[in-house]
Length: 387
Image (cartoon, rainbow, N blue to C red; front, side):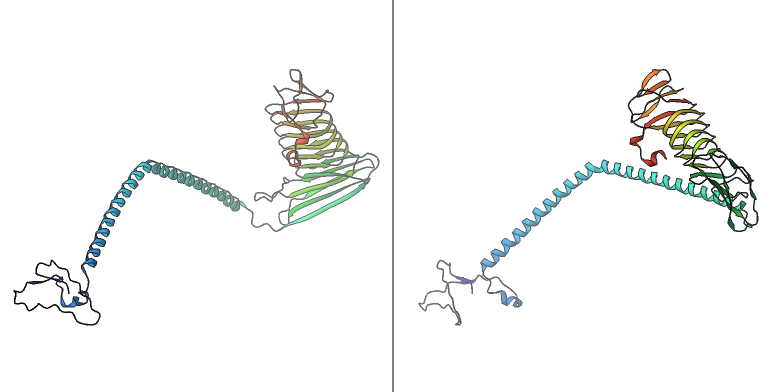
């Protein structure tokens, strides 16, 4: 109950827990003052809220006003944030475009690389297919055949090996015998016969290998090239001559030695005496040599390491790479403007075309065309660098 009687000058508060409340007029004969109901008018369904006082209504209005203000502030903040974001996007837009361009450029490079690899793969496939078209598929399986013989010798024997179309490997041993083993990879159906002619005495052995097909380390699709290798064991002290257009390997022999190769490599290890070698295009390696060396090549590079009493080197387009101890004493003459020196003290220039290492001594003479003469320090090299 909330109302006003008359002018409402006097405030009356009534409370009751269980009993009913009523307001009645005094029976004094005076006129009745009007009574005004100050409660808001509600529907019948809202009877439960009739006991809500005016303070609650005011508080609700205040909360609604705060919510409206918060929403307004949030909208303002969001607008300001959007404005800042738009400005930042506008600022970095050029950078984003640059990144896109660079990324596209990289993708284009990758595409070119992929195209290049695809073309290379197709080219290799074409080559393989061409070989397969010309292959002789009717040939039988390959087989290995070996021939060998042993000869007794006296003193310092002279051994000559003429083996064109074959690779040759010679090794020194302690026996007073010369032994050879010829290994042939042949085709049973289209076999190219390989023969060995032997001429022997007490002081010498001559071996002539005849192979009409070019010896090779590959099984070819073209022709009937067979794989042929001859291994020869000789006394450690032997005068030796080898002639072949295949690979040459020589190990542990002393004496007067002549090696004549072609386009295949020549490898010499732990040999001493006098060494004469010639090659056309094959790479030459002489490791652990002691004595006098005469080397002639056309296009192949020559690698030298050892204790050389003298060196005479001639090349057309090849280079000489000489590996020496750090305290090497030698005089090097060459028809070059300057030596290439690696990890060694610079030599003394005696005169044009002559350089002296240490106190001088052994004579190393080189005559080359378009190659170089390089001298490098043995102590700074690994095994794989000069082998």
